[in-house]
Image (cartoon, rainbow, N blue to C red; front, side, top):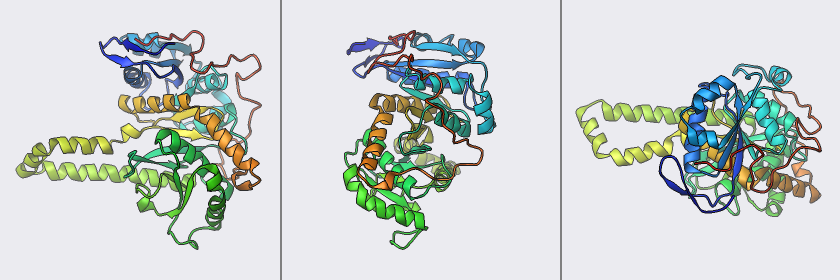
Length: 407
């Protein structure tokens, strides 16, 4: 693995200064199957030739999808699964029957140290339950949080919002831990040296909100300095995308509602804009004159370009793509998984949470948020494939059997 330039099958030359990263992919997950997933991986590979893949799926589907993708085939190792987790499967069912599924094997590769990150567009509840079992949560965390990038007015163009659906409830300890994890994610994903974290609330006054939220605010005010971020108090829903904060912390119930509401609002704005510009001759002329600004607006508002939620708090990197993602959206989530794997975000978060606990403050104590009743909370003794004989990845090397070239 050397630095330099490589020319791919498309005739383009790209820098390969970044270290090789291996992404373990649930190639059967999502609404559209392996063809769409591999289309996304191929797009991501074109932008980052230092990507390698472990493709977990059914032989026939993967062979057909790889047939006309020579570069992707050379950068991949195919791992045949025994089953696929249905999109409507209950988490408990997936845990019982999905050990050799494409999703389960993708997670096992990270647990065994054969990949830097796992990617799936499959069933969210099943992925959360299986990831929690296979990738032991970081110390002081019993369940991870899902972090999403939210378009904003900040210089980086995005804010971090968590939790957007992992845990329906979160107590004060969990919210403090989320803030610590979200701040570390913002350092990596947004390049913010000292992130500003705020709690989502119904008002900015100190007396507003439920008791657990007010207690979390008190604790964050005392621990933020030592954890390397600034606590910005409360933020209301209409300020999630503002310049005032970098990280917005909430429970999974409120976070998921906020996320889906924003997605719906963005679609509504797009519909209104198309109607206004396409409903008359003057509107169509205006659209033609404003073609470039409208294209930039569309790109900025395109949810496919921010696809991918990171499971923070596990001992390995897991990225969840939207189930209905197309090739562009899968490529975005793949690039995110690669970036988090290269940054070793799981290790960095574990260190942050551990150092917070070691300070003598219990603000980052156990996450006692109530999980959905169908999600098992038992943890294995290290997950599948994590025995003493498991081969570990070198700092920037691929696992055995995966091609190191990409073009």
